[in-house]
Image 1 (cartoon, rainbow, N blue to C red):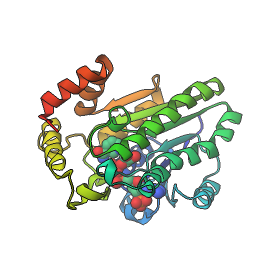
Image 2 (image 1 turned 90 degrees about the vertical axis):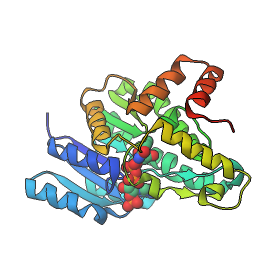
Image 3 (image 1 turned 180 degrees about the vertical axis):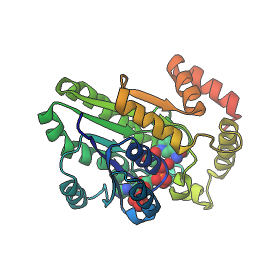
Image 4 (image 1 turned 60 degrees about the horizontal axis):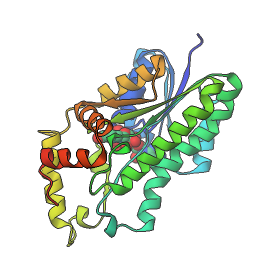
Length: 277
Ligand SMILES: NC(=O)c1ccc[n+]([C@@H]2O[C@H](COP(=O)([O-])OP(=O)(O)OC[C@H]3O[C@@H](n4cnc5c(N)ncnc54)[C@H](OP(=O)(O)O)[C@@H]3O)[C@@H](O)[C@H]2O)c1
């Protein structure tokens, strides 16, 4: 088969950067997009020295003109990986509609903008793969990440509908659901209210939830971005299912959620995590 062109958003850091690197190593024609692509100049330099086909692009997934300019440079996209994302953290009471819209602009409207832009070409060619990077938070919602979770639940719903709509045209949709992954994602989160350390009736919840997360991932995240990259590439090359949880935490929590009603799941999770709030 001719060399396949992949566009991956959020390729300057973490999961996106590891995925761009792996895809380039495997011989794909890779376009890695971010608002600050220069942050990944080391990746571009390494690819160049090895003769890999990797180009970094400036693209803000929140902006029509920026996405169009990026796509015009690429031409036909065979494989789209919607990976760019961030989190707005904090108690819902302390959020505003602007916070919700800010979160959805990147995590939901961003992928949607790219999907609708590449679908006509994929449909006409009768083939294509779209991988949407969701999260364990796209399956279960936890305290203090209601806005982030709702954005990933929305991405899951878009993906599931798309799966039904475009499989008919030879286009595969895959959803990646990582648990906690060791990337700058936490540092890049925007914290609001109690999560930002402000005076708040939710102060004790923040403390309890931090302890709970330590129980879920003792010693911090253990999943490396390269492991998620390997699952994304496997989905692109061999994908035969819609959802791919990644990491022990994601597998454990998502399996539990699938096998229990909500009340049983809540009771087990509260017990395991020591959550009394
Ligand atoms: N790390 C985790 O624990 C974890 C777990 C589950 C799911 N995820 C999901 O995995 C994806 C990647 O996260 P990560 O952990 O690799 O985080 P990261 O290291 O913070 O990387 C995020 C990437 O997205 C880009 N980005 C952010 N806003 C953008 C925008 N408006 N337009 C274009 N690019 C944008 C960033 O580059 P610029 O800032 O230069 O634009 C960066 O390249 C996200 O969708 C996240 O929700 C992460």
